[in-house]
Amino acid sequence: MADEIRHDVAADVTQPVLICLLGSFRVLKVGANVPVRSGGKTAILLSSLALRDRHRASRQSLLETLWPDTDSARSAHALNSLIYALRQLLGDALAGAPPVVYTAGAYELNEGAGVGVDVAHFDTSATTAERHLREGDIPAAVRSWCRAAAIYKGDVYAVGEDIHAIVQRERLRGLYLSVLAHLADQCFRESNYSEALGYALRLLSHDPCREDGHRMAMRCYVRLGERAQALRQYRLCAKILASEFDAQPEALTGVLFEQVRTNPGAV
Image (tube, rainbow, N blue to C red):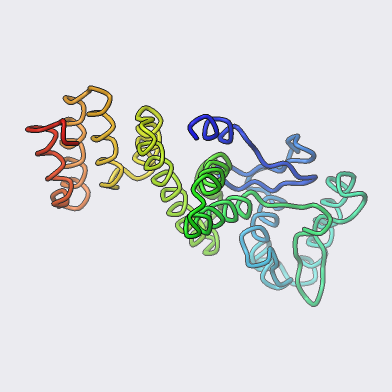
């Protein structure tokens, strides 16, 4: 299982055109970066579509997002020009099809022609893992968790105060932390304490207040023969919680600390 984890984490998503919003904005055409300026109108258009339900947004909402202070005739012409330029830029990877199509008053990414979004791939992998877990298929769940962890390059890219991006960023971030926690638990069960520690520390780098991550790190340090580091991890946890929330660690974390301090063999 651990070998599968290491192998799958190196995997990546390939599609004729892939819109990437995790970590930074990128557009990949047949796996190669396409020069699209982050923060420009093309990036705003593609990210707006990528983060909405069914990758679809009304014409009016796009006009208001892209050109909020421009009269409707000029902004409509500019949007048409932007859509045309996108087809010129990406159409050759889609057998000439447009990457963005217009139907019933709305624009949407042309998934049928081969346009994908890394956010959607991550979401699918993470939710598929949960389904496998409920069904009791742990190896399949681990493969899907690993795929999700490999896709997630960072929090969702957004320009300005796009409410769709803010909501999605928080939801996906929470899902990613859950993926890391599951992988840490699975590695620990298999006595692969180094990898379990790696996932726990990765989790804590994104959310230092996650006590389950601190507890996993403490247990891993003990199993790796680093009891002193486990004690330091508890003190770090306590310091972070006091600073952030003026709170003490949970009782469960305190019990683990006492075990590490007085009876590490029981951890």
